[in-house]
Amino acid sequence: MKIPTYLDTKNQVVIFKDNEWINKSIAVLKDDFLDVSETETLFIYVEDYLKENINLNLKEKAKTTIYMIFKTSVPKHYEIKINLDQNAELDVFSVVRNVEKTQLTINRKFELAKSSNLKIRNALLNMGETSLNDSVNLNGEKAEVNMDLLNVGSYNDIFKVNQDVSHKAKWTVSNITNSLISNSNSKLDYSVSGRIFKGNEHSSCRQTNKGIILSEYGDIGVIPKLFIDEYNVEASHGAAIGQIDEEQLYYLLSRGLTETEARSLIISGYTKPFVANIVDEDIKELVERQILKRINEADIL
Amino acid sequence: MILEIKDLYVSVEDNIILQGVNLTVKGGETHAIMGPNGTGKSTLASICMGHPKYKIESGDILLDGESIINKTVDERSRMGIFLAMQNPTEVPGVTNFDFVKAALQTRMEEGKHLRVGKFILEFEKASENLKMGKGLAHRFLNQGFSGGEKKRNEILQMQLIKPKFAFLDEIDSGLDVDALRIVGENVTNQKSSDLGLVLITHYQRLLDYIVPDYVHIMINGMIVKTGGKDLIEKIDSEGYDWVKTELGITDFDVRKAPVSLGTCPSKSLK
Image (cartoon, rainbow over all chains, first blue to last red; front, side):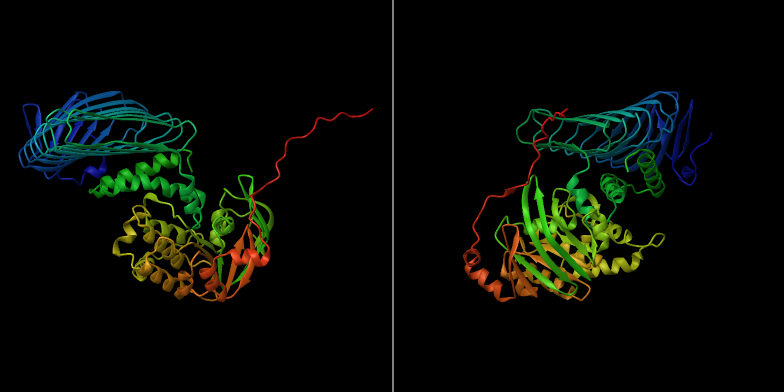
């Protein structure tokens, strides 16, 4: 089984490939659930895995960082369930590395118990048609989720992303930040929903979406939605999508940057803050390379 | 080193704003341009920088004898023109450090690279001089800056980029007394025979810190009077009405640039 070389040096790796999975970590498989509670940092590599379901569990007070790397050469569909028990903390970073145009659907469902904390960071930098559906249930009081997503589309890529957070307990918090870049004929279609059900007061639900369209036929659509059935809460949403701001361009040009340099710097303003938060240096380098490739292979500069 | 603005007529959206401006600035000189609102002071600075919104109807701008009116904005910058803007633009996600580094790197010969260690020290020193705080390098460009911080950040860029000619467009607006002093001292410290300065301001207070060699009064898109420091005090106490009276200037509507209505159909005569 061939796995990427950057995973060779990692101590904790689980590989789902073709019709098997290999556990090179201390994570425990029990009742179809991979218990990742004992691992501090775990790398999960998924390539053309023939089964659909992957289930992860994080026990009470566990604190884990997971890097999920998806690579697909044939149409695939995955159903992933992740449970966080009380006071558990999970930082899950996902990157899709399709090098061929294909179809990939990832449906993930996160269940958060009381005072658990989830960070989801998604890098969608791949080719083809991608559908990502992240559904988060904040079931226990003071559960919190922070979702940060970077999507760079090029050529005829199609991305359909559905993010849905349900506040089902009091004092729950959700923050969603999406940074979207569309070039060539790529289409980025986002549905972002926050729901606060009745009785779940003191909850906070926020969404920020910013998008930049770099070509005539690029397309970004974002529908930010809030469904609020409680008065004593905080909620905000918004989407700012447009082409490169002419005043920003002029400002950078006025300091001597060429137009190519200025455009590149403005685009980096969308990507760098996301990359800066990646702790693992190998994954950071991988993502940086992929961003650069996606930007350079397209006709934007 | 010499910047010459010759009989410059400039329009924006078919309205003529500058109506024959003449100005010569030599290296080491400091010129102040004062005048009522809407008389074209900022237009003059913007057109020298090459803002695409403005159109030169006639006249020329020469830098060391070479016309720059066909140069792009970035070419003008690399030739030595700098504009400290009235409303500096926010660029989210781009750090001050990366921005200024890119501005310096682009000025270097091909194949040569900026010495980052030296640059960091220079950046920190400039930041300290302008009391910008230690975290400035990693803050996003002008994002979340107060009005005063934005203006000080313009001066910081000027210090690091080291232009030949700098236009400071109302750099004093939005500054409190202490910030004004800091900006004034920093600009004055940068004065040398390698820098020509053009200050655009409404108030004497900036010129208390950055003493000009020449003071120009601009009204209705023209420089109508030039003098020394004595002019500043008179303007500060009496406004501009005395200038208009003295020179017989009346307020007028903005002139429209001539617009082609098309050509008449013609018939050839046999």
